[in-house]
Image 1 (spheres, rainbow, N blue to C red):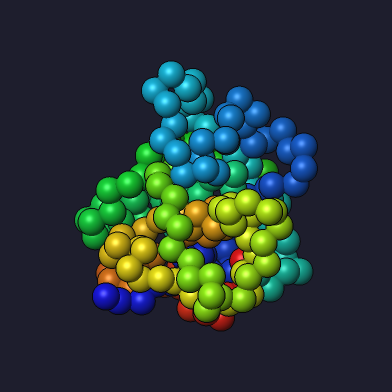
Image 2 (spheres, rainbow, N blue to C red):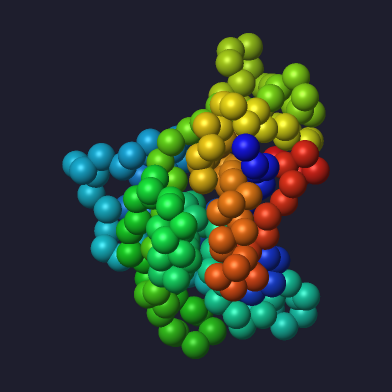
Length: 200
């Protein structure tokens, strides 16, 4: 059935400026649907493009480089056009994409070869008995669990290539066939962590 991995970016490269109250990240977007894995309704007005700003380059940080990575983390994942194309070619069909403009405060350059991505669909695929998990409510542990080691129930994942984890909606999970396809296509700036060893 194949293994599943936590989908992340490499630590090297530029980063989106996500500090609280950041006016460079578009205030017109209601991120509610994006965080819930729900389709953004057609009636929702989405700016075109959605605006973001990079953090200023920090030459003293070992993680900072001038490279623009394939995946930038923001209120929604920002994927490069090349990564989106590769995902589609690999069989991923549950993405809504919206153009963005990412301003570089160091030189004023605006990057437009990215899209904000809504990963549609939450999958309750955690094996809670085998995971190291803390639940913060009396109800079902959907969206409200912390994991120190996540075991995926492969039967509940239904062989999906890419999805948000219902028990921790910040986590994007990918199947090993998708991981292998992306690495084969040269996306070496992505990271794929074994969920059993990940904290989320």
